[in-house]
Length: 104
Image 1 (cartoon, rainbow, N blue to C red):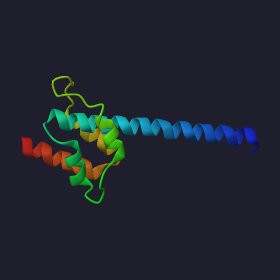
Image 2: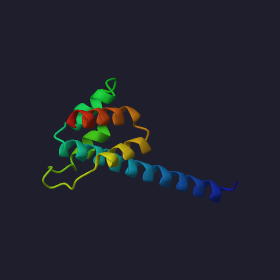
Image 3: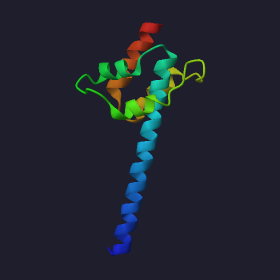
């Protein structure tokens, strides 16, 4: 593999990582906005799912983008569960499922 191929592979890898980070932030935003829409605290829900983590910096950053329930569009329960599962957040999906069940 020559230098050009190595550099090209590195650029592709960096682009894939950046895309994943952006998609992960969108997942966090969907989760956070869903929580606000349901009258739930996203940070508390996250702590229930991951009690060993003191804080999640990405969650803190994304919370700045969350709007009030009145400003936000509806986020169906299936959407938030699907997005969480897509990123392997099964523990968080379980906490969300419990909140859905308690609501009904």
